[in-house]
Image (tube, rainbow, N blue to C red; front, side):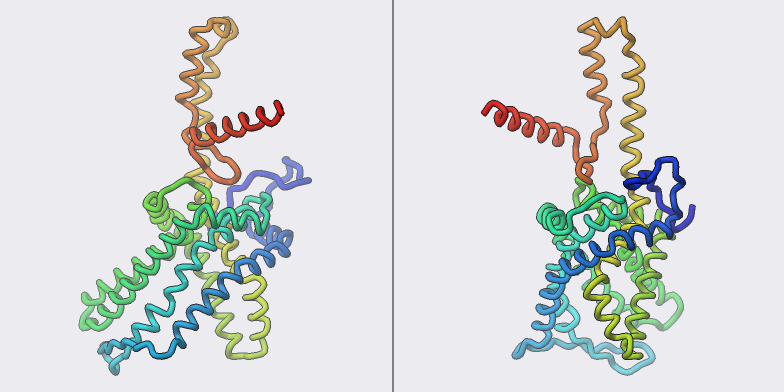
Length: 344
């Protein structure tokens, strides 16, 4: 299977179902071209909390009268390194507040990847409200991981006296890579499934290994973007283009790249099994209801109960997997409301 291949079989509007599916790389640019104006709108919407967060970080950095805590480190083979704890750990703390807003960004770009419609403003705001708590907690966990990892990496970098002393530092770097790969899957799983944070992390760490090729591909794309940003700063002539790219496309494009690469893995291992399981369980019930038994009320009730037990646990509604019992209860409530309105 190609690293950049995707498992989407649903045709777009006006496309014949018998028409062969375009290669993934072609579809990537086709969707980007068709939704280009919406990508800009989405990026401008996300830019509002991003600018506010950046202003908070800059405010903490320039805040007068705050003592700057410093730590002197004796790195092997070099001069003492002064670590400013305030700038390293307190200044980036407001970034935790930005993470919940990625829920709306992720939901809209995921729908673009699925070639489904999404309202830029209303869907983004709705998803931010629904998933604020989990995204905020995940942001806190990421910040805690950053603090612990950076301390560990700096500490072990001072003990590189022999080859075996490199093992702890190597393990730290491996954990860092796995965590980065897991975070490619966390946002889209949180907006797609009814999962606890623990369940989402368990799946994310599995996908960090299962989708290894895709994860490296995403990382390479981001490294290329970082290199282009660095070159624009050196050359100067392209700095203006870089600023326009960040303002108009950067955040939505990065979210789109991640979701386009990882969603096929999630669809294959989490979404399709639910549908396939439901079809396999429903087939025997349908096969065991011949016409002569349909008139038997007792047998029909038993078959209905058996089919009820074999229904899939989750159903896919409005772009999100929810428990069947919850969906049916909400539908019953809505139907009752419609009946009361009709009576009026």
